[in-house]
Length: 493
Length: 84
Ligand code: FES
Image (cartoon, rainbow over all chains, first blue to last red; front, side, top):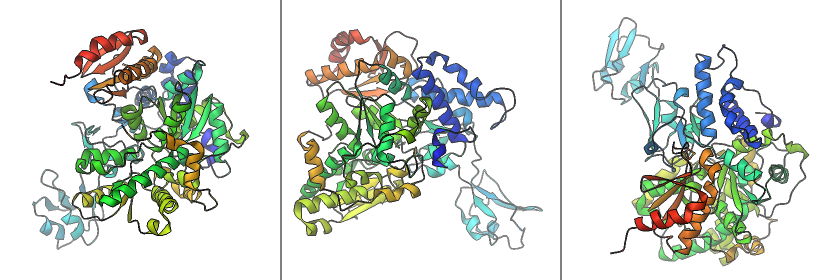
């Protein structure tokens, strides 16, 4: 995507339908006209000729469900038992195509050969020959995959529904109509299915109208806390300072970086690590909420290994609340899981969470030109900013340890970096059985780190290079002392 | 015990934020942090009722921002499990 176009797009694919709905909702919310939200479906899908789906009625129904989600509601009226505040992603049932779930399928590549290796290797007798080639009987097939391996023409393929394939914890099933259903007890809110579904049929619920409401209420002081990964999201010529300026222009009373919180989290976490190391106990990072949920729900025996520090966004929020106890705080990040984290754990200090997608919708609704912004300064270290990418937490921890105990202590630390849910799960399995001898585990569920989160605006390959720690930096310790966050309690309760 | 306050758009306009802030304050004042956890929830499908939807042990209550004290005293406090 050409980044200059982020703020001015035409509907041409799934992402733009979602952002169009979010923009319309923002406009109505800023104008105090949310009661007109019903009109959005007709505005976006006028006439009788369908553009994306079978008919305009279905297209409008999809938009209606998206409008509901933009307003903090479930896509359909379902019973409260299906809704859990810990579940942030929901299937838009009208948008789900119920993709074929037959896994092993014989394609046109089948040459109807004479040996029919596929038939011979199938342990379940599920394959038979027909004049037009081999055929798999779906009722007998158990998805062992032997036939696909045996076929010399690679004519048998394994088709897995994209949502099922990307879900790291196997939380997606099909209902009797083949519509995807998310198991709320298994889901870790990582958002992989949101970006994985080619029909955009899985989406996150939004708090955007709440945020706009806060901004319109002039009796309240509203502060934004932005995730470090926001740097570079609007293209390479738009600096972090300009992005901060644009956000302030939405009506926020102040803006802070979660990277400032990250500096102090790194500082305290490194101290905790040194304590743990004495006891020979590995410490797990606590900043990624999906990693945290993964440990809590799937590896409860490792719960005591997780760092007791709050995530950086909460550390920054505690800092703001300390200055202004009545502050209303909005976290802005690339992450869906943070929404769940805030609703479940930090609702007393953080009022709402916005994704980058939702931020763009608000900027578009207010017609704020990001290019005309003055460049604001930044108080965080390059290490705090580095929390945005895989390996960054580990780097910050090493840096603090070398500041506290010297270079040797730092380089002797054994650190395992887990990049993405799969690596996280593998490492946790090994840890559980005492097969992984390390001092520290950095876990991030998005492959690449937060810069590859489900709602980023740029591909991580473009933004990655912005997050190299720089040695010109003052020490993390001095960044922490400057803001005196070390005097506050930033531990989880 | 878990208290979930609805932050869906309808409840939000009816004062979710005030309800959350006040409950948080009351929980702190009464040192119930370890016994009561305060959470947010998206729309619970009861927008048409007056007051902010609050669920507590799977029962629903509708709380006006001005009545939080009352709600806390009459509903929350009695339902905290007693230490024998
Ligand atoms: S918004 Fe609270 S019940 Fe619907």
